Length: 86
Image 1 (tube, rainbow, N blue to C red):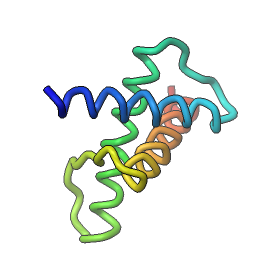
Image 2: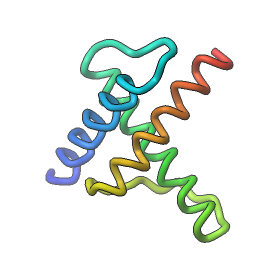
Image 3: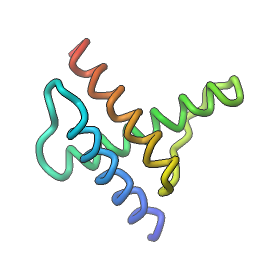
């Protein structure tokens, strides 16, 4: 139960920061913002795994300062991909 709450908090924080920093179309509402942050956490964690260890695995980040930073970068990447191709 604590892990679920941590993911929701991480998603809300990362999604809100990414929405504030990104200049394109933004998501609106609390649930899409949390979803964006969670997607960003998986994108950021997976890219960190790829760049650090050289293998691509679907890995999430944790609720920590580096984890939030990676989740925000992943959320901005997700917003950019959505604006570019969808």
